[in-house]
Image (cartoon, rainbow, N blue to C red; front, side, top):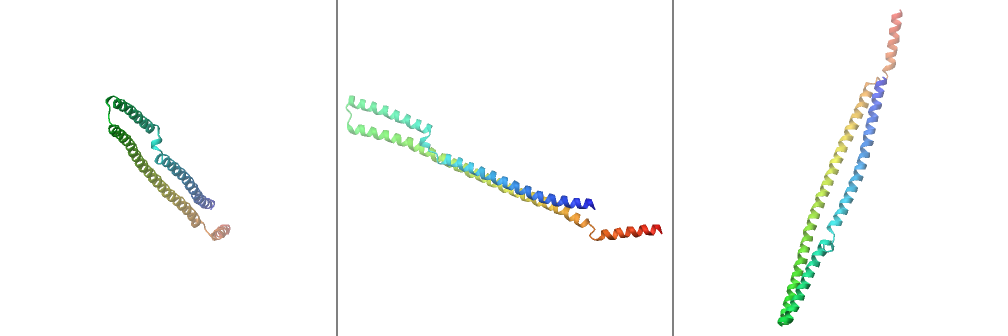
Length: 184
Protein backbone atom coordinates (compact mmCIF):
# COMPACT_ATOMS: atom_id res chain seq x y z
CA UNK A 1 0.00 0.00 0.00
CA UNK A 2 2.82 2.40 0.86
CA UNK A 3 4.61 1.56 -2.36
CA UNK A 4 1.52 2.37 -4.38
CA UNK A 5 1.29 5.75 -2.68
CA UNK A 6 4.98 6.41 -3.28
CA UNK A 7 4.55 5.37 -6.89
CA UNK A 8 1.70 7.86 -7.27
CA UNK A 9 3.65 10.63 -5.56
CA UNK A 10 6.64 9.92 -7.78
CA UNK A 11 4.39 10.08 -10.84
CA UNK A 12 2.96 13.41 -9.76
CA UNK A 13 6.45 14.75 -9.00
CA UNK A 14 7.77 13.59 -12.37
CA UNK A 15 4.86 15.20 -14.18
CA UNK A 16 5.19 18.54 -12.46
CA UNK A 17 9.01 18.56 -12.66
CA UNK A 18 8.88 17.67 -16.36
CA UNK A 19 6.52 20.55 -17.06
CA UNK A 20 8.56 23.03 -15.00
CA UNK A 21 11.88 21.94 -16.53
CA UNK A 22 10.40 22.16 -20.00
CA UNK A 23 9.09 25.66 -19.32
CA UNK A 24 12.50 26.77 -17.99
CA UNK A 25 14.29 25.28 -21.00
CA UNK A 26 11.86 27.04 -23.32
CA UNK A 27 12.48 30.40 -21.59
CA UNK A 28 16.25 29.92 -21.77
CA UNK A 29 16.03 28.92 -25.43
CA UNK A 30 13.94 32.01 -26.21
CA UNK A 31 16.51 34.25 -24.50
CA UNK A 32 19.31 32.60 -26.45
CA UNK A 33 17.44 32.94 -29.75
CA UNK A 34 16.68 36.62 -29.04
CA UNK A 35 20.37 37.22 -28.31
CA UNK A 36 21.43 35.38 -31.49
CA UNK A 37 18.92 37.36 -33.56
CA UNK A 38 20.13 40.65 -32.06
CA UNK A 39 23.76 39.76 -32.82
CA UNK A 40 22.81 38.74 -36.35
CA UNK A 41 20.94 42.02 -36.88
CA UNK A 42 23.91 43.99 -35.57
CA UNK A 43 26.27 42.15 -37.90
CA UNK A 44 23.93 42.77 -40.81
CA UNK A 45 23.60 46.50 -40.13
CA UNK A 46 27.35 46.92 -39.72
CA UNK A 47 28.16 45.07 -42.92
CA UNK A 48 25.25 45.96 -45.17
CA UNK A 49 25.16 49.66 -44.43
CA UNK A 50 28.91 50.04 -44.11
CA UNK A 51 30.54 52.76 -46.19
CA UNK A 52 32.67 51.05 -48.81
CA UNK A 53 34.08 54.35 -50.06
CA UNK A 54 35.15 55.14 -46.51
CA UNK A 55 37.09 51.90 -46.10
CA UNK A 56 40.87 51.96 -46.03
CA UNK A 57 41.20 49.91 -49.22
CA UNK A 58 38.80 52.15 -51.15
CA UNK A 59 40.43 55.36 -49.94
CA UNK A 60 43.84 53.96 -50.92
CA UNK A 61 42.58 53.02 -54.40
CA UNK A 62 41.05 56.46 -54.92
CA UNK A 63 44.24 58.14 -53.68
CA UNK A 64 46.39 56.06 -56.08
CA UNK A 65 44.17 57.03 -59.00
CA UNK A 66 44.19 60.71 -57.97
CA UNK A 67 47.99 60.71 -57.68
CA UNK A 68 48.37 59.00 -61.06
CA UNK A 69 45.96 61.45 -62.68
CA UNK A 70 47.68 64.45 -61.07
CA UNK A 71 51.08 63.31 -62.38
CA UNK A 72 49.60 62.66 -65.80
CA UNK A 73 47.99 66.13 -65.86
CA UNK A 74 51.28 67.75 -64.85
CA UNK A 75 53.08 65.89 -67.62
CA UNK A 76 50.36 66.82 -70.13
CA UNK A 77 50.59 70.51 -69.16
CA UNK A 78 54.35 70.46 -69.45
CA UNK A 79 54.11 68.71 -72.83
CA UNK A 80 51.49 71.27 -73.95
CA UNK A 81 53.83 74.16 -73.10
CA UNK A 82 56.70 72.57 -74.99
CA UNK A 83 54.69 71.39 -77.99
CA UNK A 84 52.26 74.30 -78.05
CA UNK A 85 49.14 72.13 -77.74
CA UNK A 86 45.78 73.77 -78.25
CA UNK A 87 43.30 74.36 -75.41
CA UNK A 88 41.00 71.78 -77.00
CA UNK A 89 43.71 69.13 -76.54
CA UNK A 90 43.99 70.03 -72.85
CA UNK A 91 40.21 69.80 -72.43
CA UNK A 92 40.17 66.42 -74.16
CA UNK A 93 42.91 65.13 -71.86
CA UNK A 94 41.01 66.39 -68.81
CA UNK A 95 37.94 64.53 -70.06
CA UNK A 96 39.97 61.34 -70.26
CA UNK A 97 41.15 61.91 -66.71
CA UNK A 98 37.58 62.37 -65.47
CA UNK A 99 36.45 59.21 -67.28
CA UNK A 100 39.28 57.26 -65.63
CA UNK A 101 38.18 58.51 -62.19
CA UNK A 102 34.59 57.74 -63.10
CA UNK A 103 35.61 54.18 -64.00
CA UNK A 104 37.34 53.69 -60.64
CA UNK A 105 34.34 55.03 -58.75
CA UNK A 106 31.99 52.85 -60.83
CA UNK A 107 34.09 49.77 -60.06
CA UNK A 108 34.04 50.61 -56.36
CA UNK A 109 30.27 51.11 -56.43
CA UNK A 110 29.84 47.81 -58.27
CA UNK A 111 32.02 46.04 -55.70
CA UNK A 112 29.93 47.62 -52.93
CA UNK A 113 26.73 46.40 -54.55
CA UNK A 114 28.16 42.87 -54.84
CA UNK A 115 29.25 43.01 -51.20
CA UNK A 116 25.79 44.12 -50.11
CA UNK A 117 24.22 41.24 -52.05
CA UNK A 118 26.55 38.74 -50.37
CA UNK A 119 25.89 40.22 -46.92
CA UNK A 120 22.14 40.13 -47.55
CA UNK A 121 22.29 36.49 -48.69
CA UNK A 122 24.34 35.49 -45.63
CA UNK A 123 21.92 37.37 -43.40
CA UNK A 124 18.90 35.57 -44.85
CA UNK A 125 20.70 32.24 -44.55
CA UNK A 126 21.59 32.90 -40.90
CA UNK A 127 18.08 34.07 -40.05
CA UNK A 128 16.59 30.95 -41.64
CA UNK A 129 19.03 28.73 -39.75
CA UNK A 130 18.12 30.45 -36.46
CA UNK A 131 14.43 30.11 -37.24
CA UNK A 132 14.76 26.42 -38.11
CA UNK A 133 16.79 25.66 -34.99
CA UNK A 134 14.22 27.50 -32.89
CA UNK A 135 11.39 25.50 -34.41
CA UNK A 136 13.27 22.24 -33.88
CA UNK A 137 13.99 23.15 -30.24
CA UNK A 138 10.36 24.04 -29.60
CA UNK A 139 9.19 20.82 -31.18
CA UNK A 140 11.63 18.79 -29.07
CA UNK A 141 10.58 20.64 -25.89
CA UNK A 142 6.95 19.95 -26.66
CA UNK A 143 7.57 16.23 -27.23
CA UNK A 144 9.70 15.92 -24.09
CA UNK A 145 7.14 17.75 -21.95
CA UNK A 146 4.32 15.60 -23.29
CA UNK A 147 6.35 12.46 -22.69
CA UNK A 148 7.30 13.43 -19.13
CA UNK A 149 3.76 14.48 -18.30
CA UNK A 150 2.35 11.32 -19.87
CA UNK A 151 4.76 9.07 -17.99
CA UNK A 152 4.05 10.85 -14.74
CA UNK A 153 0.30 10.68 -15.23
CA UNK A 154 0.58 6.97 -16.09
CA UNK A 155 2.45 6.32 -12.85
CA UNK A 156 -0.17 8.29 -10.92
CA UNK A 157 -3.00 6.48 -12.67
CA UNK A 158 -1.43 3.08 -11.97
CA UNK A 159 -1.03 3.99 -8.32
CA UNK A 160 -4.64 5.14 -8.09
CA UNK A 161 -5.93 2.05 -9.88
CA UNK A 162 -3.86 -0.18 -7.62
CA UNK A 163 -5.27 1.37 -4.47
CA UNK A 164 -8.03 -0.64 -2.89
CA UNK A 165 -10.44 2.17 -2.15
CA UNK A 166 -12.72 1.16 0.72
CA UNK A 167 -11.62 -2.47 0.63
CA UNK A 168 -8.91 -2.05 3.23
CA UNK A 169 -11.35 -2.40 6.12
CA UNK A 170 -13.10 -5.36 4.45
CA UNK A 171 -9.77 -7.16 4.22
CA UNK A 172 -9.03 -6.30 7.84
CA UNK A 173 -12.40 -7.72 8.90
CA UNK A 174 -11.79 -10.84 6.81
CA UNK A 175 -8.44 -11.33 8.50
CA UNK A 176 -10.01 -10.82 11.91
CA UNK A 177 -12.75 -13.33 11.00
CA UNK A 178 -10.09 -15.81 9.84
CA UNK A 179 -8.26 -15.45 13.15
CA UNK A 180 -11.50 -16.06 15.09
CA UNK A 181 -12.19 -19.13 13.00
CA UNK A 182 -8.73 -20.47 13.75
CA UNK A 183 -9.22 -19.98 17.46
CA UNK A 184 -12.51 -21.79 17.48
